[in-house]
Each structure stands twice: as C-alpha cells, then as structure tokens.
Image 1 (tube, rainbow, N blue to C red):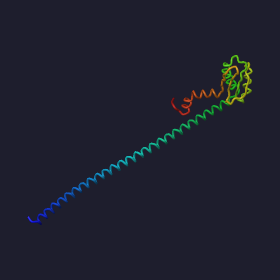
Image 2: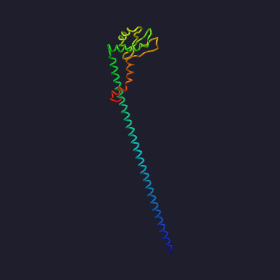
Image 3: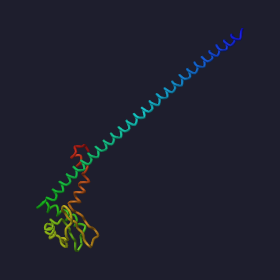
Image 4: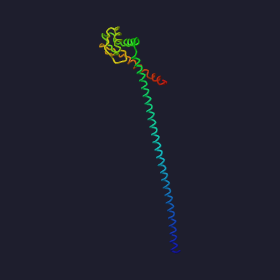
Length: 195
C-alpha cells in the first residue's frame, strides 16, 4: 500500500465522517427547526386562545353591563310609574271635600282622641285649607282647639301638654302605611305580575 493510497483512504474516511457529521447536523437542525416550529405553533395557539378568552370576557362584561343598565332603566321606569300613581292618589286625597273629607277627618280625630282622655287642653293641627272644617269638628270636643297648620294632605296631628304623646293621624301617614303594606300588590297590578 502506497502512501497515496493511505492518504486517499484517510481522505475517504474523512469525507465519509464529514458526510455523517453533516447528515447528523442536518438531522439535528431539522429536529431543532421542527421543535421551534412546534413551539411557535404552541405559542400561536396559546396566544389565539388567550385573545379569544379576552374577547369572550370582554363580550361577557359588555353584555352584563348592558343587562344591568337595562335592568336599572326598567327599575327607574317602575319607580317613576309608582311615583306617578302615588302622586295621583295624593292629588285625589287633596281633592276630597264635603262630607267625605269631614267624615274621614272626624274618624281620624276620634281615633287620636282616645290617647288624650282627661287632658284639659288638646291642640289639634291640620292642613291650612281644613282649618274651618277642623274648627267645626272641634266644637264637638271639650278642651280641644285648633292650634295651627300642619303640612299634610289632610287629617289631624293631636298633642297635649298633659301627655308626651303626639298622634299623627294625617292622610299622609295613613297613605304611607297603606302604600308600604300594599306596595307589592300595587306593583304587581301595575306591571301585570303574579304575586
């Protein structure tokens, strides 16, 4: 074997080894590229999922916000409707006159007077427009006097020095109690709801 043959064999082996190294390197490079592409796909998929989740969350928040706003608007409309009904009732109460107003005022005074048995002087307050009516009714009560006006729809407020009690038997207080006790039924009837 000549030196040239040995050199040629070494070169062939070196070429083969270089070819193997290149093949291994290419294979490893392909693996790295494949891993990088897979990682990139995962990153893209994760980013897409995150963006989709954010979009869904934003949509859900906007929907919830819109539903809440609509509910608040409905409640406000109901409150306005109930206030309108209450105002109409108050207007009708103020408009009561004649025998009906006298009868109701007398009943409220009778109910209040039970708290003042034996009192020498009992002061009765009422609506300014009802002064004549109340004074006329008080003619039937010993020791009772009209003491001035009270801002109300009608009825009476009764008090005495002998008693620490002040009885508010105004139409307002009766309406407030009736309204409170029947608000659910009023609302149901007004808005066609079942109780």
